[in-house]
Image (cartoon, rainbow, N blue to C red; front, side, top):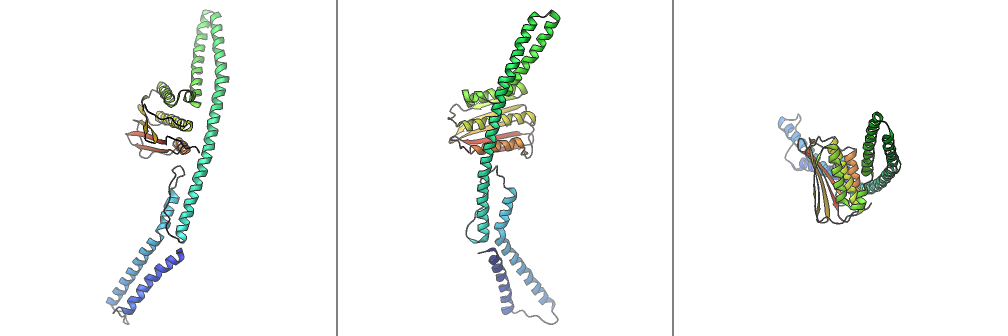
Length: 317
């Protein structure tokens, strides 16, 4: 039944009930109208209007649910659908909306996959240039400073040693950036070693106390899944160091049936409702690439937890 006929039938039922009451009810209207007759007529009008409102509310309820979903839908949280049973224009509109959501989610996942792949490729290129160009140039500078310091007189020698140490510290920072941009240990030694190296590096440079809890029976994962787990851990640690005012962070990776669950929990200040900034939305986009779900829970003075549940088999976009 179309929306027009649905509303027409509802009003026809109300008007038919009113006509039946006028035909068969023992109520008459005098001239002038008596008080009791006016009360009865006004009461009947109120009943008819209430019945009409209730019936219209029931008939148009699917449109209200559709409006709510349209205003709150988030493509980074896929699977939000409305049930569309029966025929009629309203059911057809809901089915069309569900089909549009399905198409938009697929297009968003595809575009996000391309963007993130391009981002990873650019990170690898920058890391390679830092390693090959900047790293080698700074290594050559260190060797030159060492030779110059060996031949320099005593007052100048001390200054050259200080410059060499500063250059060495800068070279260590460049190497640290290279490891963050392109986690070579992830390809060479696997996820657990990469996460261990990442957490140790963060603890050394930020002062955070980081506890690691890794299952011993973790299954083999797709390379894309391992990269997403690594990047989500990296972003979560960065957020904890920059925004959470945390003293300790726990990184928990466990095997749960057909999924692996990564949980990063800090003891920071927390927030009432975690703001979906670029970092969290970036993690959600990465989670979509492998068919994973990402949950961020936080409360004031109780810290924040980032939980990623990823399928073992992986899901390539």
